[in-house]
Image (cartoon, rainbow, N blue to C red; front, top):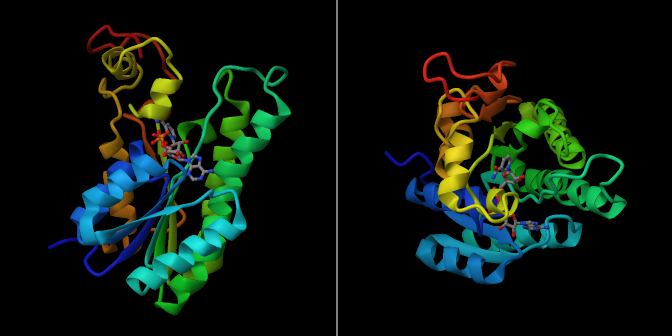
Length: 264
Ligand SMILES: NC(=O)c1ccc[n+]([C@@H]2O[C@H](COP(=O)([O-])OP(=O)(O)OC[C@H]3O[C@@H](n4cnc5c(N)ncnc54)[C@H](O)[C@@H]3O)[C@@H](O)[C@H]2O)c1
């Protein structure tokens, strides 16, 4: 039985990486999927792959008018809104606090944090009209623990974790569940951008050595977790923060694996 039969979902950042994997998976599980992104060519490519179950809407998630229009177009096309995967994001990794520019900091807060808030703000009234809904926000392990060179990104993602809990409590009585996924290093165009000069195989190998499960994170790993949280399988789950990181944040130990000798 398809787990999202008769559901209508918006996936922000759905033209690439984790969002694209989620758009395809949600549709395979029976949902109609609205892809919100700013990469028009990729957005239309995914829309085409989804056939009659897909719609691409160019959206800057940091602009309230864009997000309002996105929700309006989703409801106009498919009649209702049940699921929001609030997943679009950008990253600057490297500069420490004194070197990160104000513009870089503002951009990450505006897209990663305010964008998630705007998605919830405009989607929730439609979900309430339909009797409830499920929101899944994408944060990051960066929002859970500290790294060198991720202060702006980590702050934006820490904010997403907090927003998830506040929204879950505010709207539980209206039948809206709100949960959050925290990917660890996951092989997507974003992750490749952080490793200039490395091949996908090199990034995969490096990532695989960086978590206790000794396997790199793939977009589908996060998409499957988002599917669970968005579906009725998670009917009694709200306000939860789920790391999809091969166990990275479960341990403070970063030495060689006792099992394999590989460095964690
Ligand atoms: N890849 C990782 O290692 C990793 C780790 C932790 C968290 N994340 C988070 O996962 C989410 C998805 O990232 P990904 O790795 O798939 O990267 P990605 O770059 O492949 O996908 C991100 C998508 O968001 C879109 N986007 C960016 N700004 C936007 C805006 N203003 N409005 C609409 N769309 C916008 C991009 O065009 C892109 O299609 C992000 O929130 C990211 O922070 C990724």
